[in-house]
Length: 245
Image (cartoon, rainbow, N blue to C red):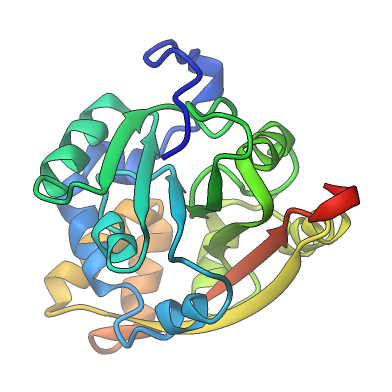
């Protein structure tokens, strides 16, 4: 997949956006990943959004949960993750998938050559709104003309997850985030999915790694069963082709 043009393993701490949930609780986060999009609504939407059959990069891939899914259709898949323990977990997961690799890297400094990939995907990773311009420029650099940057994040306007999110992040303004990406030329789509868990214990554990103790308990009390709806903001921007590229 493309030319490895940059030295690996030289990330600066200022480049890394920590993810305390998966960094500190990878086993619980695994259960969260399994429970997310339980009916496949988001995956079906993504399938019609762009062509996933070429070279795909998953930025902030974590422990590689989504990499095998991309490998079902992609010619090659590269997972990029800044946290070394997660890189190792991801490499174990993709053992036996020769078209998939995982490297240490950041959204701001992808270890790829110019115009070398077809899709850059990031799911709840780095691209959270104002301040992510370095990553946007880097994605544009590595995308081929006609390629797509696909950003998936939790929708702060969708209930019930949005109010829980905003309760923990009172300075987070989802409307301003929408405006930021509008100005950057993204098409925005809102997709509602279902998170479903096998038992209340797993549901509660997931909510406790996503929120403060106070908000997590509020969320647990507000969910009567084993599932709840979760809205996502799906953003896509295609690199121009021809004279404008």
